Length: 208
Image 1 (tube, rainbow, N blue to C red):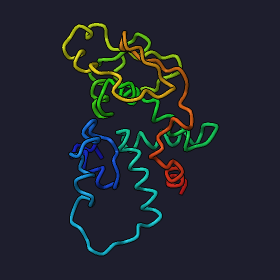
Image 2: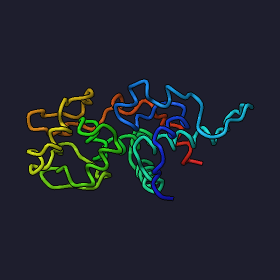
Image 3: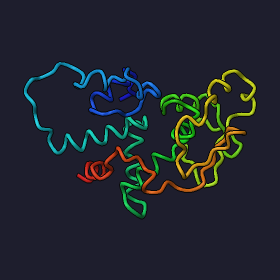
C-alpha cells in the first residue's frame, strides 16, 4: 500500500483527536476536529463498542499517521524495539522521535512533520556538515542539524526561519538562533516522549 495522499484532517477526525498534521491550522477554529466532531464517512446511528483488536489497531495507526511512517518501516521499528534492551514501547517512541524529519519539525524549521519530510527530501539540511536527504535518518547525540549554507541568503530561508522558535524546543535539543542550527544534546527522556501515544497498546498489538 502506498503513502496516504488524501486530506490530513480526515485522519484526525477518524482518530477522534488532533494529530497536528496541518501545522498552525490545528491551533485555530478552522481545525476540522473543532468544526466536525463526527468521524468521516456515512454515519450509523447505532453505536458499537470497538473490539480490543480495534482499540490496539487504532493506536498503532495513530502513531504511524503522526510521524508519517509506512507500515513496513513501522514494523521494522517495532522489531528493533523488541530486540533492544529496556522497555519496548519507550524504545519505539525514541526511534520515532529521533527521525531527521521529526527533528526538523521540533526545531521549528517546518510547520508540520509532513512539511519537514519534504524539506529534508529536497536536500535543504545537513547533519554533521553532510547533506542528508533521508527523512528516516536516525540522529545521534552530538549531531548538528543545520540549513545548507547556500540557502541562507535566499528569500525561502528567511521566510522559513522568521519567528523561530515558533514552539517550545524539547530539552533534549538545543537551537542556535543566530546560526539557525540545532544539536541533539541527549536522548529523549521518558517525559519528553509523545504523551498522546499509548505505546503499551502498540506493543500488545504486535505481540499477538
